[in-house]
Length: 246
Length: 307
Image: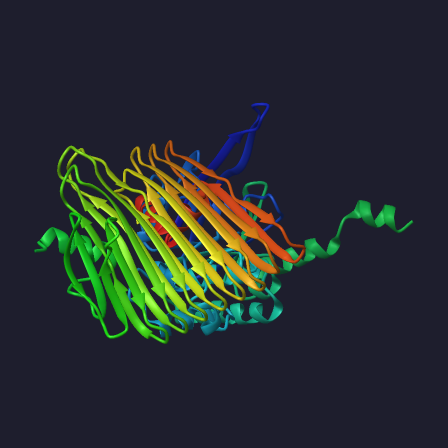
């Protein structure tokens, strides 16, 4: 189980004024659930996910994974405890091939090509075209993003965090990706925490967490929260409708 | 006779664990240790007073190799060697050179080699050269290789030079004259650390119509080391040339990359790219999220970069 207790990330801006990026976030996520985190841009979703992976050090509160306090643990230690994180904008590597990254991710230097190819197929990449390619600037943003997701699949970790996995991915690959998330969830071996704004991904969720202004605005079963989100987004902006429709 | 240390050096510079197949000439502390020739490849000691060998490859020789490694394990030993390669027409051969210095003393050990290649029409040559230094002595390990290549019509050379750690000072000079429809590809890999210095001057002259040249230089400069690169590509005819220099800088190292392209013909198409930068923070973070420590992540990134 992932337990987030009173998590704060507060930093000062240039003028010294305190910015609350995360303000007292508390969440409990049970094992093997698929939880979608959604909410307006700048609300603190990515900071929260990065804090779980250790990429951001919170200024207050604690994070527990399977009962162990990991708040002070390094990224490497958390990774070895079974937490993985798919970057929203993954880096490129000159000289490292797709296969090299998948080997590192799986923790097996001798990862069979056949198995590595399976992970690529699951994110909609034609494996044989990509397996020996370098993860450098010759790949498009969408290709790098899908390779990133494939590395998380290869890790087979207990907690998989994906930060906007749909960003930059074409419709066909996206369909394949949602199938893959569904299949991982169905196997019931991992907890999935997915930051997303996509209806099709939100639809896969057991639970939805709405993060707004660095706080948990809503958290509950999809059936309960999703209608509330739809209601708010379809109402639109009253100012715009009045002024623009004149 | 060669001892264990020599074999270890041979493994580092030429990937040899036993006497190689085909033609070879092994030089230890300035003396010939062993030599073998084949029906198509002859190796003879120079008779004009200079130190070195002539390697002659008969026209039409295919799928043969020549190994000419050099080993120095005597501190204070310095040498200047001239090796000339005469490759006939229509050949397809591999040449593996390289020098290893094991210096346990306090005096400088130095190998300066001048290799000249005359490559005949339509011949393909793959030339691999590795430099490696080791030894607990305070004496410096110095290499100053010079390579000159003349490519006739339709000929090609694929040159790979590697120097990873252990060499205190190197000044490398490479000059390739590329004839009609001939091709030169140079891949250079370099890692310096400590207070080492490395300088690489390259000049590729695309002389014949349809000539092409490519330079791919990747280097890592660590600690207090210094590197300077001067790759120059000159187009004297309708030709294509590309120079690509990439360096990773670490610690207090210094890297200068000064590529030059010179066109003397309206159909000369020349490109250069040069980049120097530190290891990106997000690359380290990504590999750490895969369970690597920061040190392991750094090593993987450098290994991949110099692969």
